[in-house]
Length: 370
Image 1 (cartoon, one colour):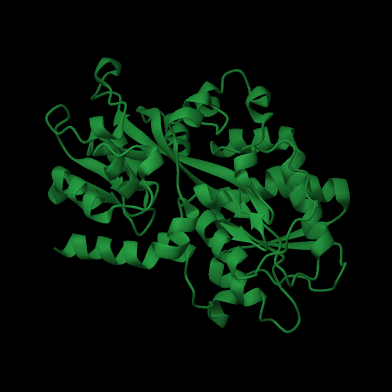
Image 2 (spheres, rainbow, N blue to C red):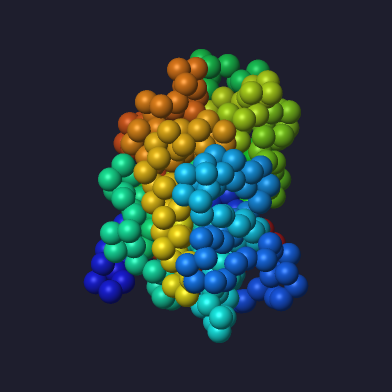
């Protein structure tokens, strides 16, 4: 994909743990929703950056690992809001007083749409990406964090010797009896990619999705044997409790649960990688401050490692692996720099979902009701 003659490498990345619907929503958010956000500063060159994110423990990690050190080093205040979405990003461009939110954390498909709709500023050398894996970088920002969806299992019920390694293994109902946990397509479309790989489609040939083949593959599991995760925490409970001995799960969720003794093992083969992206809103009143923050996040390998250790989600900074503690091998293995993922992983195609999400969602809902 190109914009203004520039290649956008991010079109090989894709959906995240957050709402599949919200990633490409086109309606503007309502005024009451906006009022839930912290009131940002607007003055140009005010020494402030207004960052809209998703809140929760992930938002706490952003604040403590990234924003507080940034404030101390630069004197620039970071105001944090919640409710980040493509709709919120769009709203910034129609505000006659300029954007209230300078940076809006976006799932990769929404980021692609924001670029296409001229919502974001080009970087133009204001961010040093020399330490970021090139495939995660675009002229408008970068996919700053990565999430890997993998084949998981309850290690107490399925020992290492019998562990499923691929999606085809997980689809083998003779070898593995019982129900399967999969992410609801309303949350993340990775289940369709998993279904296609289980049916023998190679990662290089996944897109455009053959929806007929994907749903036929899901039929092989039988609808009654699929337990749909309505949140990304659901597979942790489903697999950890043994309700579903095998299922799809994000590595970050599994790693954090295992610290509490969940006993969830997984295979990185055919992992499906998506992520979130950052860029600066075109109508920002604090452009210099916003780019200063993003440059800080792109260049600080030490803080990248702290963020990865805190959240168990990957960051495509080349120094992270060497900066993690020696006892963090589980996190290190799930980093985007891991050769296993580099060789066998599927990168969600954000461009595909930016263009086809309504059709995919409609087909999934029809299949569920059939």
